[in-house]
Length: 260
Image (cartoon, rainbow, N blue to C red; front, side):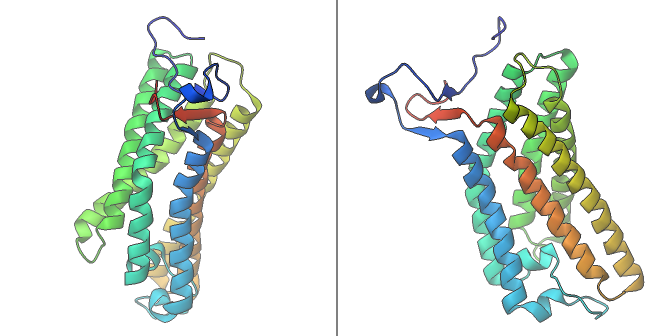
């Protein structure tokens, strides 16, 4: 169903009346979604694993010299040359596809929701937050705290704030009335969105608590709990964005005709 004056849904269905000779190159969207989120996932796992194996002492050291068993995220991805180069590479490779996914989501919400004035405002807010989240991630990844601490700190705050608010608004949007009956994959997607957002937010609260406690008391192992909470924040954020696999499961991109 397409309401008068609204743009056509900008995806090609898997089935088409055109002959193979008339079709351009085609890409299943779920494959794009998988490859996009797999890049930062690989980068995260590589940087943490490499730091534990080859830079354990320096990566896990703290200012008060208490026992610690895991590197913080900033130490793992920005404290050493190999890890820093790998992280910058995967973030650079995933940046353009991720912005593309954001644009698809803007169209997706506009064409699938029964848009009221408030819903339209939420869609636009989610799109702006998604862009700012990605810009913040690029900023904190390419400018380390040792190179420019104020910029790195500002980028981190932008990323964290926009990420949390984007996930919250997206969960809200996923439960709004739609122009068609909610399918099984749609229902699965919105349930997991809510689950991953709650996990992300709770982990963030724990991370802030353990970080403050470590700085205040310097207890052995507390910084490890902070690092572990950071890991869950990162992984739940990646998992949240992975729900695009279900949202666009039956969509393909026709590279011959573009997004029309």
